[in-house]
Length: 551
Image (cartoon, rainbow, N blue to C red):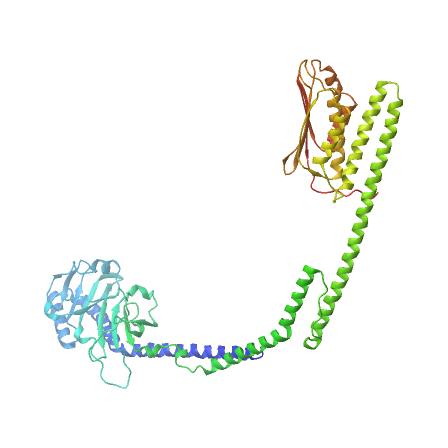
């Protein structure tokens, strides 16, 4: 890690040096391209200078077109640099020229655009005189009192441009191509023996995107990699594209030695290898062993074995000792919690058993009182109370017989209750049907549900009847409707006279049924016809045990 800053500094310095070399290489290539295009630049600048000088003279001579034409012919002959000079009015007519007078050039390419936006133009076209050969037309706008009057038109023979370079000490590009701002090629010159002109593959003028001074590496039309440079010859009008050997623009890393970068990189890699080996042997390997011991302890609950103390550092040795001590205390705490839980379960089962025994004792005393009672009404009241006590007793019996003392299965508790009721109050020839689901309840719901079922069963057996010739029946159902709702149904047949059943709705049994349903947070629906009496209680099954208050 100590070598990392040094390596980073070396890489950054090498990168800065590379950028400086790249910039220097690019500037040098642009300077060489500017030097190679100096003759074209001078020729175009002279043409614009001559056109500017002729502007003031031609404005005076246009009143005498013949004299103007003779003057321009003499000017072309004496300068020897131009093949044609003339004045083009806005109508597209050459009113004064060194060639054919009054020539109509209204059909000349781009002429309409040139008159719409007057400015200097350079266009590679042919002159009106076919004997003059290929020329480059230079148009210079002429103004009088800030009013556009026309163009000074000059034709530069291409033979005067693009001449081969003379042997000098200056380096020349492989080829040089000039083009105007529309992308039209103006001149070409090559320094190769076969006079080859090199351009990038699929080169288009608009791909430069306005960056008229740049260098880049691309493949030419022969699929060879070359360096290219673009510079302005006449800014805004003429640009030059030079092709150079690719070595002139290779990235700096291709020419610089890689030793300054390679040495810190190798040293850093070596230091990482040493650090990895040391950390793996001294730390990682022992940490993995500790992890395996922790995982083995969580599976088997056995104390982990001790490692070789000589191979551990003091910190890892303290960590392993702390792990062993924590495992010992954890096993001891778990053993104490298991003992406490076992004692609690035994105590709760004993409590439920004694409560059931006490309720059974109360039921036995009430049974003795029933036998001693002289009035039938008294015996019925005591027998009803006895059934309620036995219902509570059955809840406590169910609780101490289950493994989970906080829950009981209503699917077995309610059937036992109704079997006892039917056995104690079975009319002759009664048909008893039932359908129970296993529904696990907490004691807060199991107790009121059992008492509610006891009251429903007692009332159903008490007021059961059937029309003459039919068998009385009793139907009881406890069904799980969905994940959080259950429904208790008690249906009994009635005889021809059901006034006693309807009167019972205002009695003690009906009041108890409503009270127990309220404790369950249930909804009661009663259906009464001339044949059956049906009670439905729908309630939500609680999934959270509410701890009783400690006061």
